[in-house]
Length: 462
Figure 1: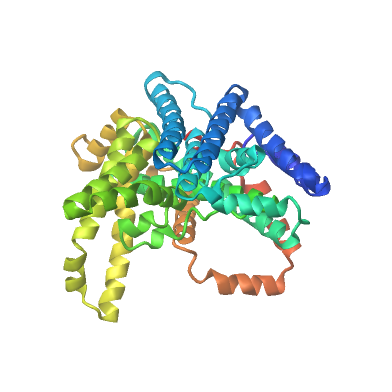
Figure 2: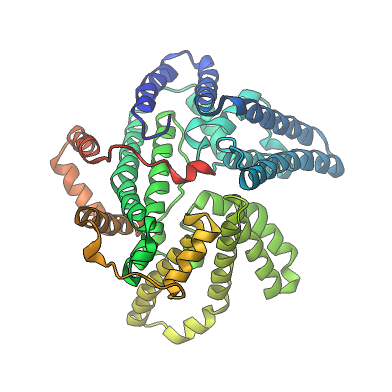
């Protein structure tokens, strides 16, 4: 049962009603039951793994908070972090090298539990003494499949508040808006872009350079529509249950360089690694100057790559972005000198930066999206002309697919660039049309224009 299926929403409504109508003392337990039930419907056999991981981190957290000696705290920190990391690495390795089915959301709940334990190590007062609260945090069903990765210090206070207060109609309405927006981004934009991708990917050697470039751009745009759509749905479902989750995207296609792009793309993962890997490593290596910075950046970005899977493509994806970021950092003074401080030159710099960043991001998605080294290499050979390309052009692509895909590419880029100028339009719409009519129109579009079978969420596999 995924976030685009009708059964999910048929179950969500009574779940939300039950959550707010049961006595406050039962709400936490009910949310845990909902979350574990959602997980069990997907992968019943891996529920014990989730429970064991949470119980271990809970135990280690209590032990860290109860000891004053640093060496004892260190023992339980490394016991918890090391064990959870070992399980994550083992399953990732089994999945990559033996085709083993990965536990649902293991990358996400593992990082959530690790961050909780590290925070307890840094501050004893942040320890959670009620196991059910920590289990609700680790298993929270809107976030467990593909995030976003929320920190315990943000999640737990909200949960403590919502289990005793009445439902907030404004928050629930906002959640409904996010769900609708996410469904439209996923089903009406992302899934239609996947049709164009699937059409060209069947025989890419038949098409000319321009179509292959368009295909490469589509990899990025479809991934954004798919993942940002999922994130909006997850945040919307969370809001219905009173939890405000962290943003995962902030106009990434408006970023003028790769460094800023990563501050706007998959933000919960980027900030997690910044706090728990990059910053400590960079501080430890600060005496090495640029060499230390380069090592910290490389470690951070390579880990982002292999976090998605132990495959060569993901490793190269991370390494490529490390190279892009280091070039961005080490050429900043030169670019500042070249463009100066004039408004016109700054506008040119910003525009060129946005275009060039999107090109670099799209090129790197060849490694990420295709996920198979042989296919990736073949695509690179076609783009470079090393392998002869075909002569099929725009005129040879199914006109309906091409028109729909072009429109969807424009919309995906516009939304991904922050939808500039849309807020005044939204205010005008709100002044003329009541919410119920807007919602009805969106539901009508989803009903009429969604393709017959939704494409699975790309990030569901991680």
